[in-house]
Image (cartoon, rainbow, N blue to C red; front, side):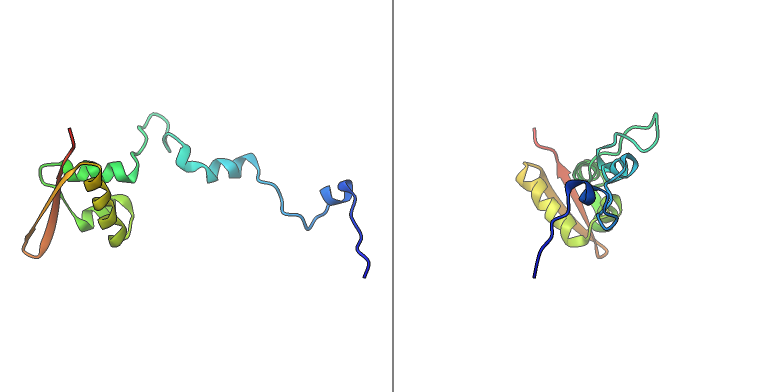
Length: 108
């Protein structure tokens, strides 16, 4: 078996090579770094911050509300509650008519 090496020029022009990303596709893949989707609108806060905002409100938030706000699965949302507790948030919950509502007090 003999192996042949392609020259650098031949490799560069080889059509089987994966095409490089265009500037447009790089912008789309780095969308999380964008400030806002719409000009003049404030940027959406990160999911963890959205969760904290929901919980520090007087009425608190149910698990379904937190899932809707973050787009996370229930186990991920509960894990994020544990993360907030580790960051110093005082978490509490109560169950009324079978629906658990979570509340938090931000650390000082």
